[in-house]
Length: 207
Image (cartoon, rainbow, N blue to C red):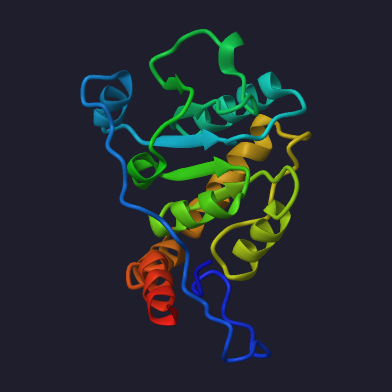
């Protein structure tokens, strides 16, 4: 993980190496696909995706996100993943696009904010992109990351995945945008971190 998001604990021994988060080069968007056309539109959009998360009323969740974003004049890119979001009951409209998966590192930097589950990889990708997060945790380490983003001034309070409504979503987006400058500062710091290379360098020396 990145020391920008979680500063090194003072009690850790010097033998504990903190490399920074591991990530590869960004993938590319298919230039002939609908996603490329969506991204080419200059109108601002909200990214919404919960990765491999499932459970709860995924249709109501999608409806709340779309209506909450529309209240602010934002389009929505729904990334359905394993089923945490189900916008299939929403009539097709010019202000939304539904995709099963997308190259996150290529897409998130273009979004004004990102609604996601708060997994470690997504938290790092969105912050590294300079995109404010709205975290809707499901389980595991996700509540920790939601709280850590809030503690470090990078996000507002997490949203309850079972109590999403348009008003809460609109308010959360508005709060997230207020953190945009701080997130961009964090993104700048993370540009100087290369956790993958640091780990490989250490392992090479160790052998």
